[in-house]
Amino acid sequence: MKVLFINATVITMDSQLGELSNGQVLVEDDRLAAVGHGLVDDPKAQGAEVIDCAGGILIPGLVNAHMHTWQTGLRGVAANWTLLEYFRHVHRGLAALFTPNDIYIATRMGAINQLNCGTTTLGDWCHNNPTPDHTDAAVSGLKESGIRALFMHGSPKPDPQPGHPHFSEIPHPRHEIERLLKGELANPKGLVTLGMAILGPHYSTLDVTLKDFALAKEFGLVASMHQGGGAAVAPGAWDEVESRGLLGPDINIVHGQSLDDGQMARFCASGVTFSIAPENEMTQGHGFPVTGLVRQHGGVVSLGVDLESVISGDMFSVARAALGMQRSLDNDASRREQGKIPDTSTITTREALGWITLDGAKALGLEARIGSLTPGKQADLVLIDSNKLNMQPVNDPVSTVVMQTSLANIDSVMVAGQFKKRSGRLLINTEQGIAELAKSGHRIHTELLAREAHSTQEANQ
Image (cartoon, rainbow, N blue to C red; front, side, top):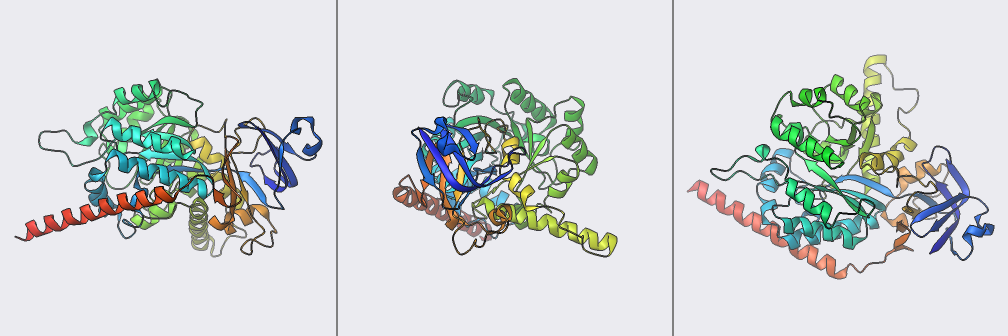
């Protein structure tokens, strides 16, 4: 199959190709075959379906580097909770109420919503999988959605039962990693591949941390871990991880609060990537996003929605939150240190677009395949209808994309050369899925409220 996009402003995010006015993009099967001008007459484009973009903007598919997609059915539930309330109500309450089917419904519909919003690659951090059936349900949901995803296999965090160890003392299950790599996620070049969502030094003992790092390295998997949000389980464990030479581009840190400046400098120098969830971090009380610290030390900034139980799933909103927050911090620092605001903005919109495209791909270990409109890479792209009222006139295409784009402008979405959305319409029926999602989410939330009311009543007796 061949598709030729014409009459588009093409923002490639490729440093060599840059932006093309009235550009053309040729897709052949699952790959980008050519990007440039005059492709209509190129023999390679013979037989291609020609799509006139009518002056729209083509960009690489967005990358949501960190989201707990299993919480899609809980939208709005945690919007007024701090991180402490989230831990109490979700990990020790709501999570335990999910059946494998609930995980499947939430993951599938959450991934479809990402496609609808222009995200073609998802870092799905699944840490509510108490059984292999829960895990398999999540993987099935991702595969059926049609999204590209790095499935981060995690582990639940319940309160321990009497006589059972705390979750921080339990190593990541090797048998599950082996099972997935021999089964559903055996193909390293498939749309859905495997990563590990480990506890890391912040949420596990040193012994568990070292075992989990070793397991990820043994199988060549990206190891992602939360950092920050309260006291560390094993203070000083990062020093041991560093001394053993375990840091590198295969290590992804989510959030990153509580790392000191020296650690941040060394981590970035070693290639460690960071996935920041600015809007959610500011909402729940993690602390200020570490965007500026990572930039200062030359590290990789990627962004994620984190929790749809708190905020929307739109990555453009996340990018604007990250950009606005860090500009605000930089402006405030300049006022305090120099007595004036900076002469120009400290971060460009182009850099912010990189956070949700190429840098997101780097965080997931997928930069060789996605993240830019580079010939030879996978054909993951988004056509933005920039002719609508909210985007005209387009004076600066990159800034228009970052600062003005909304869901209403996402015209078409392609993953591996296959349309998932076209002319503003998803190419998958969502009516039944929406009903199932609502039913699942309402049941879980209602059951939690009933349990908490019962516990309160018992405590008052």
